[in-house]
Image (tube, rainbow, N blue to C red):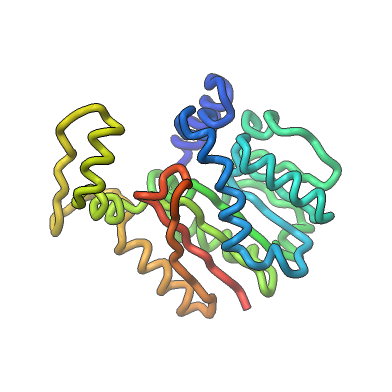
Length: 240
């Protein structure tokens, strides 16, 4: 994940639009408008008493800015964790506490570790954790920061099994041809070794892991018009 972290630091410096800086295509600017709305709908704690919000890997595009505006309006304290290059793209506000660094190795304020967060958002980040660090260490560190009644959204998980199911369908093949401009569709292989990928086995094991630890855990679908809805899904982890 540190390689990915460094890559996104470079994106923040080199890419033109905020959408490209966070790793999406510039053509997905319109799709980004629906991300925070979807997050609000899935994270019911936003509609209840909620004082502290944490976004890990917040980026600098529209969803982060909408979260900043929402928490300001609702008088909530917002912690943002990302690289210096990303965070400097965002305005400073009295209710916002920016934390520069690589999670979970970053130094967290004692106030956050003491009280925990009511809401934790980690959007389009989890699949990067498989590259360089233990994904269990990564998610365990997030779960540990949940306050009683808190909710953690691992959003926009790039599940390779979900992508294969999509590409195995006529709709998926037609979509890929239109998107790539090529007639050939990538071959889909089942029941064979595919090393270092995030698939159903990891996603479902994660769900069972945290349920067995006493957390309600749900896998939630992504729908149109979210940017990568055909191949990604969300996981909601709730502490009682």
